[in-house]
Image (tube, rainbow, N blue to C red):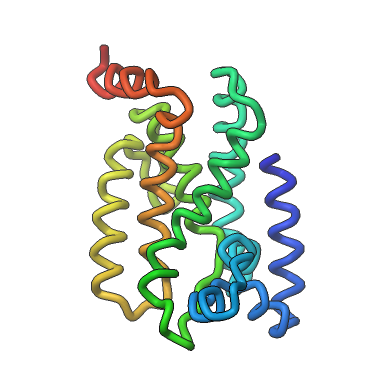
Length: 199
């Protein structure tokens, strides 16, 4: 499923690079969603990216952790639907705060799969908290440490603003991904704590 999502996202994003009408038809625009009931945007915005760098970073990160999570979920006995709801549920959860906050803002627009990608990344941190994540693709740090720093950074940057990055989506997608395995199997919380404490 990871490869299919990467392929579809890449194709739609590339088409939208040259088609601004389609770009704005798929983007998350809360004012349009609430006023005109265009609720499909809460999912379709995840298939649209601002440029090649945005697309490549998101899809590389998703590919790296998506395959791992698919295999891990299969090992736990979860069907493909679990991965589907992790990714697309993360996309929706990542957007709800902004849909509410910007529902009266005619100009607010958000795009990209970052919320869903954060959900997949944080599910991997939950399942293996001491596994190394490479910061800036170079510096290995434990996933749990990366996760804490990431969440604080997202909150700080969301309050600071001014960089055209939807840090709220990153934050809420990450929270959703971290909680998601427990929603599937509550006993995984004890599994996480045992791993975290090295027991």
